[in-house]
Image 1 (cartoon, rainbow, N blue to C red):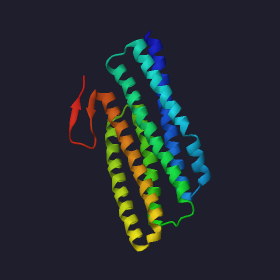
Image 2 (image 1 turned 60 degrees about the vertical axis):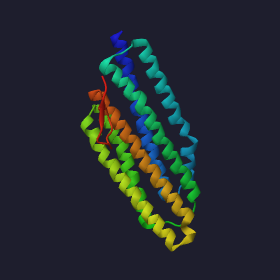
Image 3 (image 1 turned 180 degrees about the vertical axis):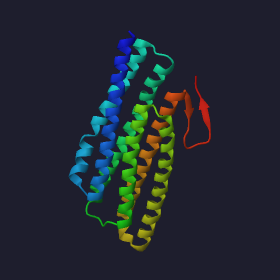
Image 4 (image 1 turned 135 degrees about the horizontal axis):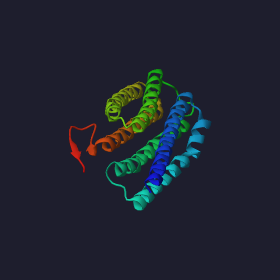
Length: 225
């Protein structure tokens, strides 16, 4: 029975990591599509959004089945619960990548603002790397790396504020830029929210290692077990 459980848990781990890699790829594609105004790629991202959703449903179903069949405890249970919780955060991150794809189509041929474009590219690189790093932290069960990613999330928030300030300034100079500015604001907010969801995954990695529920962007911590 134990060997069967270990085999299924290894498969669950692999499926979770594979879903995370897919989310990372979609985020990167969505940002590139926005920067390049590539409506074709953006539409493809929208059309294939269900791929991530289906993976989430399959992983959730598998976790429930394993809990019911094997009734795991302590570390084994925490690993399954971590995947159950974290997979939802990854799916939501994928939703925001889809939102960016919608924004790309709405942006069309509207004017580009060089400084805002640079910030979009920087935020996109940071969020993509965050997802890759959190997956590595999960695979290595590295709670220290997970904690460090909260700093990246705060950097994303700072860049989001810069986008907001620059967008409002651009609108004040040119009223015709209002629609374009609102799209820049939406994309920056989507990227910032992806960072928030990655931070949630980091918190579950810490729970996996320690059994503690923490809030990385808060001074308070709770315990479990």
